[in-house]
Image (cartoon, rainbow, N blue to C red; front, top):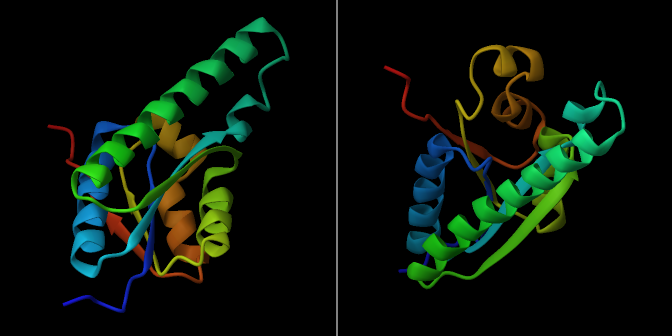
Length: 150
């Protein structure tokens, strides 16, 4: 029986091991409801604001862009294994803002994302993307906890 609750689910991934748990949850919800998936990775351009424009910044950007390609490809492969329709985006900007924009643009019914993709000082300085999305999105957000470090 097809669920009419979710027709389009956005999966926000940062490529971390912790985001895999969220991806698996999103795929299961999509499988049950026969929803279309949209995978999104955002290269955080805010991370580059304090770095002088030079070759090092260009190399870092390319590394992050490649990580994004790999992250969305992983989601695509998992979705395709379940015979689900999927569209992917590897974009740049401020992650929370871009995740919300994509979700609205594709008329998502649900945004699924994980926590603990960043840790320690990175998380303190950057803030929690999941928290910002859940606080400001007009679309329901499912936050899937990652495994806590032991």
